[in-house]
Figure 1 (cartoon, helix red, strand yellow):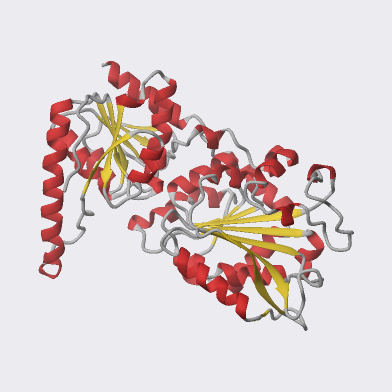
Figure 2 (cartoon, rainbow, N blue to C red):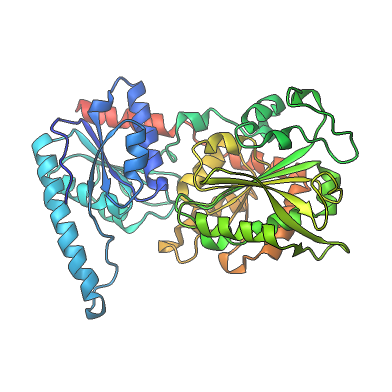
Length: 459
């Protein structure tokens, strides 16, 4: 059943969604429009009932109209006749509803954000000759964007590599709260890093001295007044999840916790793992299984470790590592390792600003945030992505050695362990990566798109 649309005229309509990667650039532009004097009543988001539009957009305070849309069919045959029937029924019904709404309210401009969720409203706008702007965040635009882009007034691009008619290279729109932050390797602001880190690490992590130093810091102690070294490894596999990445992280954490070179390099390591809703329960269960049995770590003679639960908050669980047969206080062969597993993280920009190394997919919005904040990264492009767009997203970055990358089919805990330890132990290389990736930043992209929309609105 199609939800009832708001009975008011919106000047600017955003169409698209499904994943956070399509939604967040639209919210960034919407916020920039507010800075130009528009109100939230001037703005509407149209998308899919099955995506993240409802949770993310309505949380931001904007109205939504959501439809039961189906993805575009790339092949038509008798073998997928059932899919064809559902495609025609649901999308036909959604098109009629979107067309009727847009015809009645006649917004000044519609912004296509990408994804199948945006195709139906955007196609209806094209049929009604409503000016349309396509915001491309992927270096290789998807099928929906390519079709609508042929009729668009303007196509915005993240890089200058594409050849698309009526296009402007603007960058990927990023929220102001992201563009205002810089990774600590670039800013040198250790005090600010500690302040943000308190959002993610436990008191035990913040107050734990390196091995060999008396552990007499109290909760009231100021970490800024110490010479502590610590590492933060962040893993994010997308708003829904990426199982091939997620499944390897718990065992990687155990290996890192027993690494003698890391122990000499730093006193503590925090691994912050944003799993995504889809895989969270399975990864959480796997971590709990590693509490029950010791896991052998091949590099040490007396080499087995397990997770010790610090707290379980449902969608967030926190562990530390313990050596086999030792209590927490007696675990001298482990430097302090903390592993936080969460389903979803609202404060991603702040997390990126404190991160020594990021691991994740190469989606357009993820890459844009990494570029903007300046984060050393190991990226694993999604295999079999349409037009291999995630690999295309990082081609320019790889040429400048601004990121490291590994193919998904080569991914396992041993390969990850080798690459991650090499990068964590080389602070100068990570700093150079941060400098290189940050050169690609276009922090004013959201404001530029908002200004373009205002010009179209003004006629």
